[in-house]
Length: 282
Ligand code: GUN
Image (cartoon, rainbow, N blue to C red; front, top):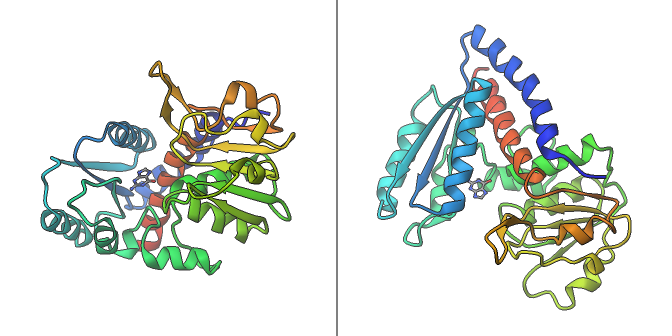
């Protein structure tokens, strides 16, 4: 089975577009600000896609582009401007930031009520405590959970193996799967004999940024394989962290790249923007 994130995202968009129109009719216009510093090529594409999706759904979208020499103090000031702007519901600072800027400091500067990425220590704490309050969660792992649910893949009692320990994907992904009742193994760059772990996964999540790291032989037959990678192969072609062409014959369900996880990330961002707008309005 191919897990078609693009089709699911388009399906979810229909409801979101209608919801945004209803909110606007009541005088509430969801608004997202995306701040990007520098010229990281992947970030440029992500930010462009986020803006395009917001416009499609009727969500107001502002992109603030700054040169790579923008200072930390200037960025903090820009964030503060939007923290104070009641018409703005979500603030997203695209990562990675240039080296001279402290990412943790920037994330903590965003008003937690506008933390649409779910990166604030408060949101992350709620996630790891399995809080039953509403709080934003990092969009890629949350979008993956939406996709699993749509395809009736229930993590309860399953062995989920995460490859990659990033704050944006790996760590929150493991917490979400644990909260959903999975047994979770985290693996990362220091893990010895990675394949011995991945071969035991009922649900395998790969988010490393290493093209074709996971081969067919690393996958348990019938497993669900979620590929978060957006890499370039030696010919410059966009590929994932999983060798899809061979892995698809072993996996029970698998996401393609592109058209798998990527569209779900952006759809989740829009869902969370709408959610923050609704909460702010109360
Ligand atoms: N860079 C890669 N993914 C993300 C994301 O989900 N949010 C932000 N802010 N930056 C990213």
